[in-house]
Image (tube, rainbow, N blue to C red; front, side, top):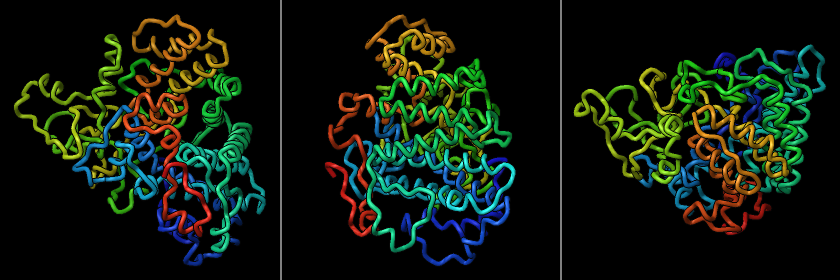
Length: 493
C-alpha cells in the first residue's frame, strides 16, 4: 500500500504465515507453514509487518464499489459482453445465485483480512512494546471493517475472533447470527476508537475518527439512530475534517489526503499486475475497468467500460446540481462535441451494455496512469468514508431520532458546497431529502445498493428486486460445501 508498502514482508509473511488470501478455500490452512507461526511474534517488527498484511486485503475494495452501484439503480455492469464478468451482469439483473465469482471474491477476501487481523490478536500477549496498543487497535478496526462487509452482503456469517482455525475446525464452525456479528463489530470499533490516536502519522493508516465514523455507520445500519448520532457527532465536533471547496477535486491523485478523507484506501501505480489475481494488485482496478473502451482523445485513457451510470441517475439530479452531476457522470458524446476537434476523438461500445455515461469519479485519466497493465494499476485512492458521508449519516441519524435541527444543519452544509439552496423540511420529508442527497453526493462510490436495502427502498427502486430475498446475497455454494455442508443458504437461493 502506498507509503507503507513493503514487498519483502510478502514473501516471508503472506506466503508462509498468513495463507488466507485469494486461495481456493477461504479457511484453507494447507500446505503447512514453512515458518513456525507460533514462534513468529517475538519482536515489534513482526506485529508491524502482520498489520501491513491485514491492511493489504483492503486492496479488493473496488469490488464493493462495483456491486454497490451495479446492484442498484445507479449503474449497469457494462463491459465487453454479458459473459465478461458474468457475475456482475447477474447482479445487475437480480438473477445472481450461489455460484457467482464476484460474490465469492467478497466472501474470500474479507475472511482473508479477518484471518490476518485475528492472527495479530491471537498473539497480542506474546511481548510488550511501545506502540502495541495502536497496532492492536488498528487490527480490530480492520477486523470490524471486514466483518461489516460480510454482514452487509450475507447476513449471518461464521464469527471467528482472536484465533486461527485448524483444518478440522473449519467443518465445525456455524454461521453466527447477524446480531452477534454486529455486536462484535461494535465492540471492535469501540475498542479501536478508545485506543487509536486522533492523528495517525502513517499515510493510509486509520485514526480514532475513522473508527468512530465507521461505528456510527454500523449503528445507522442497525437503526440505532441516537447511538449513531452520538458517534458521528464526535467526528464532526473533532474539527479534524472539513468539506473541500471544489467537489470536482475530490478524486484526483494530485489532491489525495485532503481534509474530507476520513478513511481512504491507498493505491500505488508503481507496480504492475495481472487479471489472474486482482486481490494481488497494488493499484486500483476500478478506474481502468470503468474507463472508456478503445478511447482515443484528450484527458481520459482507454478502459473496459464497466459500471456505467444509468440515465435514471443522470436525470435524477436537480437542474441546479450541475457541479456534482458533471463531476460524477461523464456524458461521452456531449464531452466529445465540446472539444476543439471532435471528429478526431473515437471510442467503442462494449457488448455488455452502453448508456453513453461513465463514472467520472473513478475513471482512467491520462495524467493518472500506472504501470502496465494500466487497466489494473491506477494510483487513485478509494475514499471509503469521507466527511460529506459523515455529515449525511449524522443528518439521517438525528432526523430519525426526531432531532431535525442538527439534521438540517448537516444536510445544508453538504448542499451549500455545490451552491444548492437550503432545505427547510422536517420529519419524513426531511428523511426523504437526506436519502436523495446521499444518492447525488455519493453516487459512483459504492453506497447506493446498501442504502436502498437498509432504508427499505430497494423494491421500489431496483428492477427485479424480490423482498425477502435480495436484501442479502447468496452464500457461495462452494464455501458451504467446503464447510461440510453445515451452513444453511440464505432465503430464496
